[in-house]
Image 1 (cartoon, rainbow, N blue to C red):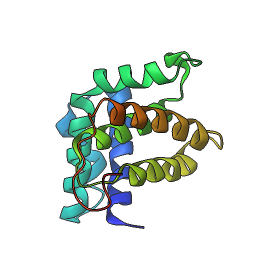
Image 2 (tube, helix red, strand yellow):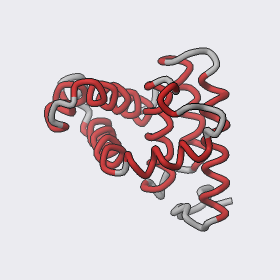
Image 3 (cartoon, rainbow, N blue to C red):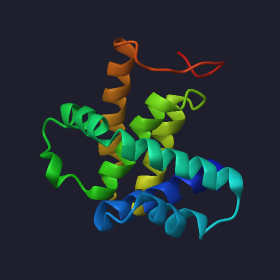
Image 4 (spheres, rainbow, N blue to C red):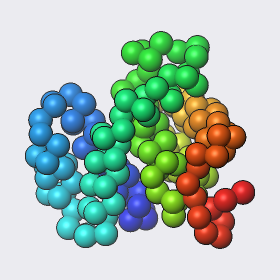
Length: 148
């Protein structure tokens, strides 16, 4: 498993714990990330992803709602919502990660942590959000292989 995959899975666990406990974010990151792995590169990415996802949750949720027109937002599985938030957060805030990598990682993580149909659902929503971000020139990606 790649370091980034480990970090994404740790971030998912931390965001899930935060969603239900509403304990201080610093405590959640310590319990769900720092105490579980000592690799600085992994913990750093995971904590940064958690921080940015929490910070922009309202914006991320609004983007997801706009693309999940046939779904009542409150009925989307919480794991799927968190995976979607993390991936859209990567689209917007991590210029070194290709969008296709964010989507592929989201699908793989959903296969492990959510339902068998989640991958298709997540792929559809993320593809739609990505297309809109490209159309609106809001995708901040630089470097070879990052921009299509």
